[in-house]
Image 1 (cartoon, rainbow, N blue to C red):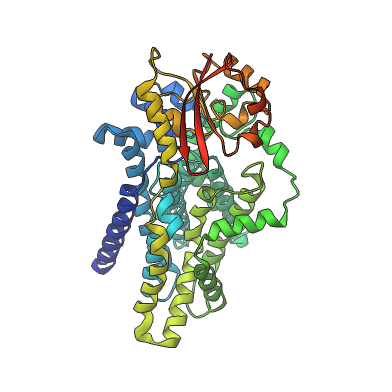
Image 2 (cartoon, rainbow, N blue to C red):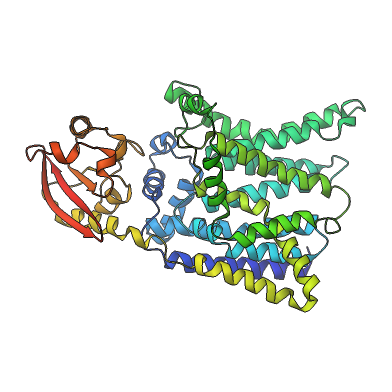
Length: 488
């Protein structure tokens, strides 16, 4: 790596860091799942490793959070800084992939700038979520796998790259359960690429390649899976992902509307970006280096396509895939947007390339730097009011339709990420009260958002009984209200 490349990477990393820090400073309320990652991280920090590994959320991100917390002493910033640092580092493998694949350094720079300023990539990878960590591991594993293919003589360097690919894919899985897809894709490419090796004495080389990429899994991921199976009593890869649930989702009739919503969420508000990606794919010829790179392009696209199909198939019961799951796939196709802009700008004017890049980035910026979760300040206000006004309870247990309310009240999350959620606690008033009273250690408070209570529990207003629930405060926000009840 020459000095010029090192300087470019340093500048790109610094720019990504600044953008993401600015977003973090403009974040008003923690992400919806942030309290759950903090709960898991606190187990590592306190040395409760059995509880940490048993937590439904996979261990890598919470463990890194616990290390950051030791340095800064603030859980929210610990989570954000891990995300910010790793998502900023992801610009390095992204740039290096582009350098390997494409004929112009300008395409690599434009791809990196798109990554840095893209609204969903920047915002989600600055939050207390696994997105930033996962993007780094995903782009890193793709780069390492592509780099391994350059070592055609099966040298030690090739096996080192394959072992590192195994480490990155293993860490991807230990960050998010769907990370297991990466291993299967890369193993498939090892098996099916270079068929001649199967009958020209290359079977040993194939076997060694498979061994090196799977060895990290045998050492870390497989023991984790075995532990989760023993703990849950069923075949599973995660405390979050039950195979009973997967069986229910395995053969859904995916409606066209659901696919449309998924794609719309995936590309977000940047319609021009989608147009550039399509244009880039159509004019790609002449911009891809010779040699292995045509296959490498298909390796990258296979990761994108297979991963996207898996997410559509299994992500959730509603057949709608959250942006936080699909957004890490954007770096895999971001190159085509860069090629599209590069070609279009050069056809108009060679001197207009920089201006064109600035125009596209300028279209991202209003969305990228928009305040984060400002509309959720009500949940923070309610939680903090309970924290400073409850009496006689050291750590009140709260049932609400948001994890943020228990978090800001100082409560622990009841039964991790399920039982404290209001919409999972019953469809009628009687079921609700039974769950509130039977929930582990009994709930102390119930927080109701009046905007959707008639949908979640239709008979709540008509059957509300003061002997069950005592209204202690009501917060008004526009056309809706949040009511705090004490559970009797």
